Length: 288
Image 1 (cartoon, rainbow, N blue to C red):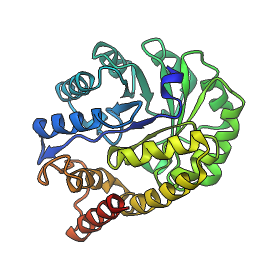
Image 2: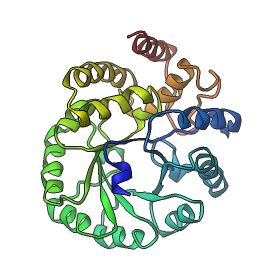
Image 3: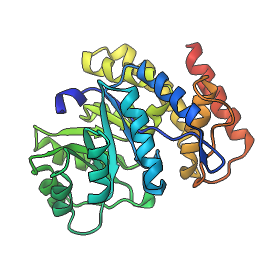
Image 4: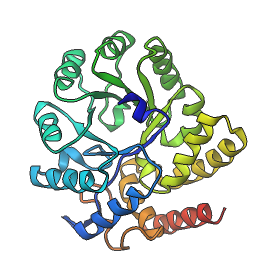
């Protein structure tokens, strides 16, 4: 499983909504489009996919749609406990992304790993994450069925550097970047895969960035890194919880889903000027 993920892009995919209802036609169009992208797999039920907010039937259908569309790819499913883990396994997921917990984190990851291989998740506290200390990180990464750790600090390069240093002491584990706002630098710091919400759109450019880093093509890597930094600045900005709607806007701007299938029932309302900015940055990325 680690070999299938290494140097791969795993987009954390959003769910297209019209109001409070999933647009399944848009969902299928999106999954069909994603199946043509150079990805290692996708992550469903993650924060980007509003996994903890979806009801059981919605989660089940979302997983079914992605499993059918990507039969040869890795499906990672978010899990906040044994019930979601079992549901993910029954639905055909290949691995779990473990939502962080404040207590008994090592035991929690061990329990989840009895169902499927686990990717640990270091998430910044403002988004509901937990600042795992080094001892806890070592304990989690020592578990045999933990594949590695996804790191999403948002803007703390120092925290990323600390976790990268811990992960280097576990050479059989993957450091997986979730750093949309400093994607290129996180790869330079040792990440060997990316599981990110930004990967939900402009997916081919991000896959090419990973390939360039893996192959030592510095010229292409620097060019793509600058392009994707501009995309991140338009999509991962305050209010940060609005990034899910912005990613749906980016997909619509790229012609993947309809313009009116871009609602996020749990996210903040955003002004039209922000949508214009997202359209502009997608258009500029495609013109380069």
